[in-house]
Length: 130
Image (cartoon, rainbow, N blue to C red; front, side):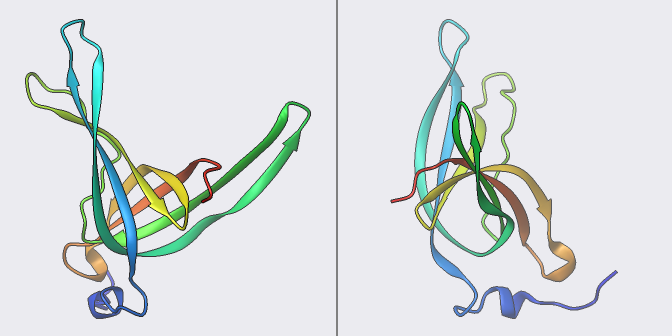
């Protein structure tokens, strides 16, 4: 188990990106048992690295842009939770980074390298460059 605490580096303004926005989607069931999302925009900070570079796949049916990023942060991103009784659930968070929207697909604890950190794997939702 690593004994290196990199909290100071991860919290350093030279590495941390403060332009991240989490679009948290709170879900509740309506009268017809369909999930309804209410979006909350929450700014947060984290260190962003490339998981898979943006790549364009050109096919006969059109072009598809794919890519993924990793975000290390103390903000509790979610890949989604189930609706349990009357309590609200959360759909997977959408994170806006550098003009693109990414869906959180998996969240790993990152506590071996500093208390309270998580590492979120995020995949590009669609081409949405500003």
